[in-house]
Image (tube, rainbow, N blue to C red):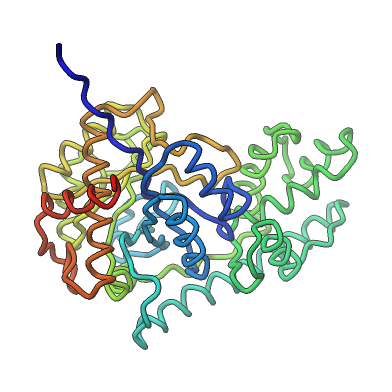
Length: 387
């Protein structure tokens, strides 16, 4: 009789944790859900801040979950923008989302890294405050009164997430959620008419569907052309990559895909993405599989791993929907090959994180070049995750 193979542990390298906009109420809520679902390694991948990372790490460790520390940035590549190239932002040429994996968030930052962190945070906070004020003015001018203010919203996000207000750096999703709540506080018979006044056209989402209404407010009122639009001040791609390396992390490209191949010539075919990433000193990539069919996920996994790029999978959880933490594709579970690749990539990150925190060489060096043996790091990471 053949003995069935032992299933690989559930791992997830990309989840947003409060005070980032999240499907979860609090950091403790994230860990409780991960525990209930049998997750063995979980990666925080927040924008703008790292204050919650110690709490996240302590609570994950206490629950027997390996905490993985990551970051996410919005960056700009002037060369790609000049060429009109879409990368992993479907609406903005030259806009590049970039992640860092396996960082050491508890180290003392160098002066340059501290300046970069402050620039990221201050730029976002100024933009978000301007958006809240602009949207409040728009609501009032269209007979939808509101008392939403930047500091009030920050306090509300902090209270909801059970974190200090100083940790909060507002995102568009926080803002859209707050103004969606203003609309749903109106009498039900008035809500659709209020939305149509605010949009200047027919509303598509049912006001009773909080997630859909938040998305519509964000797309119609906060994006380019909307009354609450304020241009982003993205970090230069090279500066973001340098910051990840200064934090002892592995630069990682989050793949948009979203039904490739038609979306982005930068990302398709997968072999071209591999070449583009290596040319920019990126040797790790991450998929959000739920955006894509299994065949697309497998195509990326095969091409990237063949090119020596480790691949991981996450769920984001940056909308109100509480989807499972075990990554899955839009048409069903991960294939065995994708699950194995994601697990091995996660193990490499776990081992890298352990090594750099102890002052030892990691999977990549200070310039971002791969210096570690992927198989050796994967084996060590598996020991950490399965212990």
